[in-house]
Length: 317
Image (tube, helix red, strand yellow):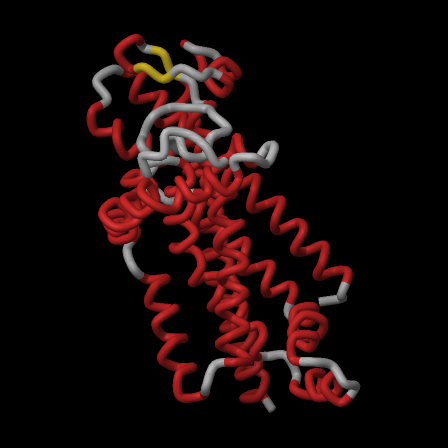
């Protein structure tokens, strides 16, 4: 009896230590996040004091030679390229996932699925080099002129699909980002579709539904939360991407509705100028850009997560 009590007490101590150990791990990452905010904010204070917080955020001029620093073109470029990437990658990723889950021959499923996962692991600089030497010439010579000609007579779209058409622009950067994040959406969506209970699909087929109806009306609604999670994951990757975008966006602070004009993003500006910052204000301005990116990333993902949790509570998941 005494031995059992001792053993029970020992198990309680082990559980307590294990729980606190895991809590320490969780708190460690919370402290890292808080530390990132504090360090970046501290290094950004000089810019906010010298230029002004709102003036820095909404400023449109970025000229280190004249000590003029405005973040709006960089924020604009980050948002535009991310939106383009998501609009292209989501349909591509969903299509690949549907093919792998429902239509792909069994002997090819593993091969194609593995290749898609490998694409997700390729370093971003490889995508950047590929974009610069392969995609940029194709865009400037064929794709962008074709889009400009096709949508040239449609209001709004004729403004979007116009510009210098050199290939190094917002649109090309968004396309490269789309190729980078498509494997994330495809892999997670494929796994989500694979766990749909067969009885649901068989019941739909038994009621006379076609394969496309089963996919759209049965499988996607069942897996919608995981699919939304895949888009959130891809969104986070697109917002913070650096090297691939730097190669193909043109790196010119610019706010324009023309997608075929060069632009810049927060990450590409930091990558290009951080090593050459020769004044305290320029250094602080670049850190301030990093701080804004962290805030934007955090807010966007927080909102997306809120939507995700709201949907989960609605379906009692």
